Structures are given as structure tokens and as C-alpha cells.
Amino acid sequence: MTEFLLALALFLVAHSIPARPAIRARFVAVLGERHYLLLYSLLSLALLAWLISAAVRAPTIPLWPTSLWSYQLAVALMLPASWLLIGGLASPNPFSISLSRRSFDAERPGIVGWMRHPVLWGFATWALVHTVANGDLVALIMFGGFLLFSLAGMKLVERRRKRQLSENGEALPRLGKGWNIRQLLVTCGGGTLFYALLLNAHPWLFGPNPAAVVLG
Image 1 (tube, rainbow, N blue to C red):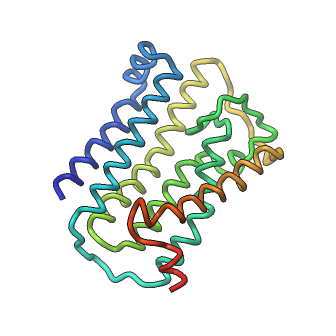
Image 2 (cartoon, rainbow, N blue to C red):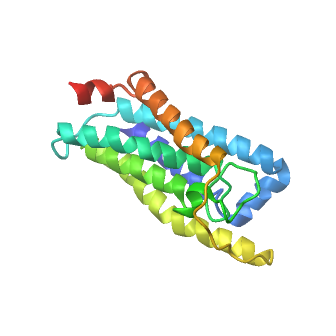
């Protein structure tokens, strides 16, 4: 349990301190925007891998009974969660998290036209269904923390983006609900592929086989 709590604390610190504008600006000034994002992404992935590994090894302390419906719910909802994650990361987004460097088209914003924070909603969905499906103390601490972190992050990220637009003399865009072919392919096709990879890799990375549990 000690290793798990240490990994969780470092993960939260790594995602809280660099998010402060002044600290982020210093890192960007030294490393450059692209190198900063690359190093930050690698650090985040490494800490997440350690956190999940520590959670798997931590003692299990049941809090509520789990049942087949909770596993089925997790398997079902992880597909739209994957669409949100992949579509959100690949879509330009002036309001929230994105890895895209393409120019933002307010008339065809893709998934951003339906929700301003698709990546964070994807993480929140992932965290919620895994909290319910696991039903133990470590899962509640880890996934429940991710859920709260995602929900709180929506307001914080949007507030920061609005301030940046205001400082640059830009107005908040009014969004349409249009999509282009690339956005549909990346969101639905890429998200479905990511979902399939997660299902197949889950037994080797995390232990349980979701498909086997659901199908019996």
C-alpha cells in the first residue's frame, strides 16, 4: 500500500504543479513548447504505468460486492470513452486538452462542437466505470481520484484557455456541430482501434480479462 500511495502522490504532483501557468512558462522557455510536451507526456505515461503496477500489487480491501452488470457496464462504456479520448486528443481545441496543432475550424469543430472537454470526459468515464467494477479501497482511491481530477480539471483548463485568448485579444469562438471526414475517421475509427487494443492488452497489463469476464 505504501508504494501505491507514493506513486499516486507523485502522479498528482506531476499533474498539478506544471499546470500552473508561471511554472509551465518557465519549462517552455527552457525546453521549448514541443520538447516540453514530449517530456511531460513521457513522464505522465511512466508515472501512470508505475501507479497502475503498484495498484495491482497493493492488498485488496473490498468495500462493496461487484457483479456481472458492473463489468458489462465497464466494457460497454469504455468504447465511447475511447472515442472521446482519441477524438479529443486529435482535434484542435481552444478550450481544453489537445495534441493537435491543426488550426481550429469553428464551423467544423468535430467532437469539440458536442462537448468542450472530450478528453477529460473520456478519463472521467474510464475512472467511474472502473471504480464501480472493482469495488475495493485501492480502486476507490485511484479511480475516484482520477474522476475528481478530471471533473475539476474541466473548469480549471477552460478558465486558463479563456484567459489566454483574452490576453491575445481573441474572442471565444461560437461553435457549430459540423464534422469532416478526417474527424469522423479519427474519432470513431481510431477510438475503436484503441478500444480493441485495450481489450486485448488488458490481461497482460492489468490482470483481468474483461471480455472473458463478460462472456463468462
